[in-house]
Image (cartoon, rainbow, N blue to C red):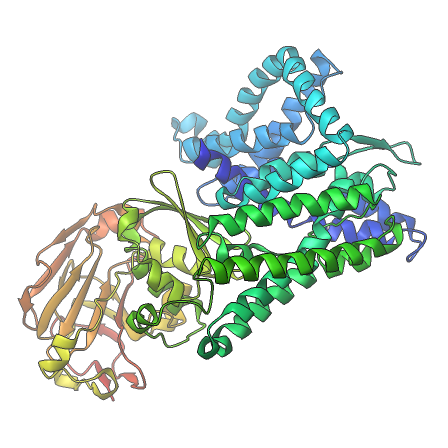
Length: 636
């Protein structure tokens, strides 16, 4: 259930990303800004249809491949559900919850039926086209159920809403504490969805009814903004002050190393309101610090309410939203005073606890722990970083599912114990969160989307990790990577077929050289042979790829076909085992070309030299070539 709720929270991030655009349009169109009414109306077009937008976004998030067919199913499901309910009982108001239900159902039905096949006379309605159809049927049933039964949970939700909205400082304080306490398990998005987009109603001057704290605040509701204002002092002052405390408490010889990182995440919080990189830097080192942070958030919320401060945001409570919505806020200058006060409290409390309890916050790590850490090359390339993350996570076979939200990777693991948390930290991770028995979250930062995409590409293509270099290999006289060469006679054609350049491979990962230099073969033969004398270092479990290391330590990846990892070994027969010595021309792998060609996007086989540095691969021959032919490639 926790994983299911986390997936909803993750899926909400895509539609929530539209809010800054909506808030900006609404705000700029108002009289005190540009006075362009149609711009405000355009922004409200997004805010007033959040339930439908949530249905689309959540369906895409739940779909295994983010397909537009799932998004369409979510939209249709929402329309069927809401109109069906209205015809039964027009007093039922499900709000954004209807969009959440429709999105979840649409996404799950997509995963189940997107590849369904029917007899020829019904084949037009098969596959992805069937998903909106089955979703419509499911939502008709749910519309009937909710039309008659939703009145009871609606009473409970209304009672909760009324209590929280009318409980004064206690209501906003409880919400502030829960908002922070739920971040470690990723469920804060769920509670925020109801507070921000569903609780409370307001009739605009144009006669429209808007719901939710954010929407009501932006449209001038004098009772909205109390559940948002208290976040500004925390995100603009409190957490940056916590960063200052961690910097001041750091060891003298470590301050220079951590100062830049702490300054960067402090500015991110102050300007944009994105706080997770800061929170995860101390969340696991000291749960006590995080509990204190959650309580102080509640205190800031209470202070803002008691001082009658109303303010709001379209994205988060940073400087950008503070300035943008300043003119429609109530007593916004008081937030600066509260912020300074909270900043002092944060600095004193955090510094005292860190020093008194000797907490290992950034810059206070033990010297022996730092000495054990391996250095990295500092590469910012996401493809290179993805490879290292996969190794630290125990390999792609150890990852059952991969998702991401605003700042973190969310994964289900086969064996969480094999994850190298120190290696993840060296790669730039702010922290690791273990949830339940198999779930793992790794805090990366706001660039998480690009890293997750690179990791997913490598997982989808089934590119094997290369074994790490060992001291033993150096002792045995292996040439360092920068000195490796390959003569023309040392490499033979591995299969009969046509040699083409990597740029012609219909796959971005290979075509752009993300995995390394090399060439590709469009095979006509069905048995692949060793192109060099050496050792088999990797036979991928799904049999579609083999890694070879020649006698000079040159590593070669033979990746048969594109996206063939999804065939799970069907159509492949391996003829060697990992660790086996081979000679040029020894058979490695037999492939059913007809079967693989029918089920994979392409049978084109990239041949990649994976551990080169400054060397250049020169391909001397192209076109049709026979098995065992030489003079194809050299490396200098």
